[in-house]
Image: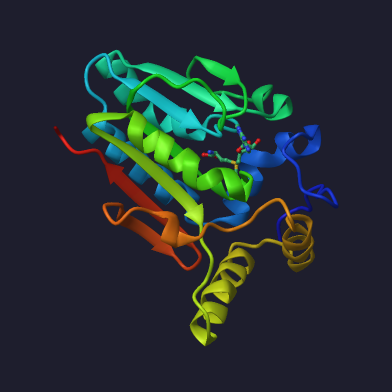
Length: 222
Ligand SMILES: C[S@@+](CC[C@H](N)C(=O)[O-])C[C@H]1O[C@@H](n2cnc3c(N)ncnc32)[C@H](O)[C@@H]1O
């Protein structure tokens, strides 16, 4: 069984203890994390042009940037990671540049490829639709925006089954039941799953494991 993580009563990424264990903790909590990261790198190879502009929104310790690194180097792309927590930023190991800033109000340039990997669920609910529309409108023709996030479950028993899949998978990779429970309760009020109806019809699903979904929003080419 995996060792216990220091879980704050009220979840925050502005914590040295959370930042210190993030990279291990996220893999312990989400067994598909590397698989979904790999898919993001795959789409990066398809949508980052030579000299392209790329953003990693809510970068944490740099997972997405590291996954994109080879493509960024090969294409000579300009990369910016955005992370609001200084504690997380202090542990950042991805490619430069890192901006310590609020992603919602950040002054983006039009981009070829942007990634919101497990971050929308932490943004204030009332900012999400406008933020998503803004990112869409900033995507250059032929570019793409990737969103991976936790979504609200459908009503009825199937929703219960989906939610229990997350619990079952965490247990299966050795997370401690007490940690799973404490983390769930710690997230109350901060992590709020996305309304999947917020996604435009043009968004294409490339990944789903129970409550977690990945979409790619490819901008029209003209
Ligand atoms: C689950 S982590 C993201 C994981 C990361 N993208 C990865 O691939 O490992 C969520 C991150 O989003 C950051 N975050 C939350 N709200 C933010 C905001 N308004 N602006 C920038 N970063 C934010 C948190 O500080 C945290 O580091």
